[in-house]
Length: 151
Image (cartoon, helix red, strand yellow):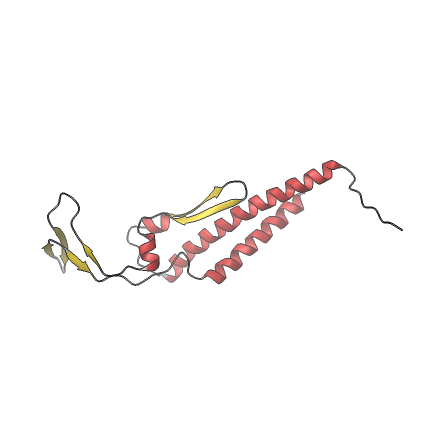
């Protein structure tokens, strides 16, 4: 007794393999896009920090990497300091300068150095992970279903 299964032709198998590759690519892109959108929505709705210039929000972007992956990043130099906070630290003038100048209550203060008290963490990029994970998985499922419907 035996049972034999055979695909009608290699063309069908190649089409199916191509569809799966497209589904993987699309799923990775949609997941990155979803994470980026949800991060920006979190910043807008929850206000974990006070946006001053908009640079931090504008630096949250995603880029494709290779065929089936993508990277989401917050490219602003100070993004980790906002996300994780800072310890107390000494601030000195930039090279070539002799003092710091800043304003307190409208008065100019000049000091050779100051001790910054540090800042508390204000998570925005890795905050709300469970919700973001659910959104990314839903986007990936939809991308795979969409691709397979087209096949």
